[in-house]
Image (cartoon, rainbow, N blue to C red; front, side, top):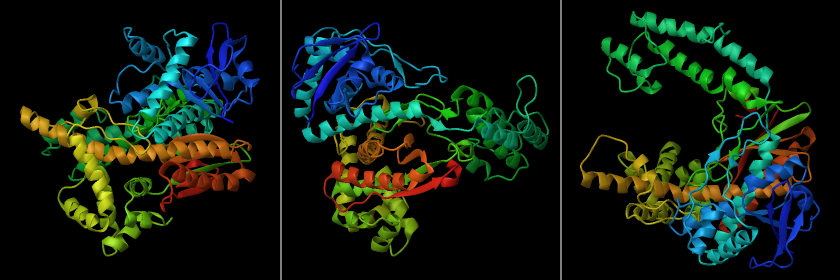
Length: 551
């Protein structure tokens, strides 16, 4: 039985709560309890809690040892519903939703404030507008009605439910933390960068490389300043546009090799050096503060610490606790498999029904065994790389998989025409003219007609990718929710997630069970998200003590 209760915190640590009918109306008297966690913990029969914000409530519950199976996040759901209605970007707080319902002035969303990285919870602290409990209940009931108006109501309900679950997972991962050895990290930094000098200057190895760069140019050059480097190369007879590695490697100059090495180590020094370690790793754990749906396509972001961009060399510091293991699982070729599922292309679904190398299977079917060409064609269709050889490859792909290519072509055309496109579950792209369009218009100044044309093409490339990448995010949410449920009785903990990779920290004797649970969750999520299709979503899984050993 789906027993739902709404709950809101009160000043002093208490809570106000009430049972709900399926339509969101109160099913009993409003109750006040002196302790929020005790109020939730005393009601294990509740299958879903309805509240304003998971980030506001759930870390407090976890700190008291109370775990929630399912929830409905009103403010997160408001974001998704606004997006579906073509109003993405409007204030999404519960107070804003209430104002829209009552015709009152709509308050702007309160600012997000990152918490101290040393705190247990790195989820954003949210400065919320005051809202009565009665108003919150009416906003929730109205949201249930708005679900019914969605293009596919059942899918939209699944989307808001799964993203609410994502916020539970994010809070739990943030509390558990990714195992991180500060000792191993410091040893790694000393190995790569050398010892640090007094006074806070760059470490020895960077200083040596900087001196080598300057010697190569015959004058003092700051390798950390691109403008200084470009000027030095110009004076040496080499006109470069950037200091990117691929461009540096096109010229013959003695400064190139030490400069490339300096840039590589400097990124480690600034992004994951001693200061980063002191700020972000505490009590043997890294807690970046996961934020579900932080991008318009549904991909997660983190509150800080570069949590989704851990360099491979730094992964040597991610070490399981004694007697425990890291189960690292990477979804294999996820986007093409998602394209097969959402396009319902019979040929591509057949190819994606094999757990093996999808690009090899495509090449055997449509490109005479040329895997590289097949990969370029598939990714070109998804990401819009359709000029030059890519255009010919796409034509070959279209002959063999017409429905798949037509699906993304239609999404691109809709984007160019200023229309909205949606993921499989109903997450909707920003409306035409949203800031993302301006971000795609990098380049030299052009006249207005050209600018409009380029904006349209840029939006088309975005919407082409959005329907695939966003639907992959839909699937990933349900995969994580299923995995969370399946390991709930184990000691295992979800500790990391990014797009197509998940890490579970578990006792060594649970590792095989966890690995099987990950694949089972992927299979279940495929069926729940996309229905009964031949498409499979295999994971490449490794059981390791150190994250760096997984790949």
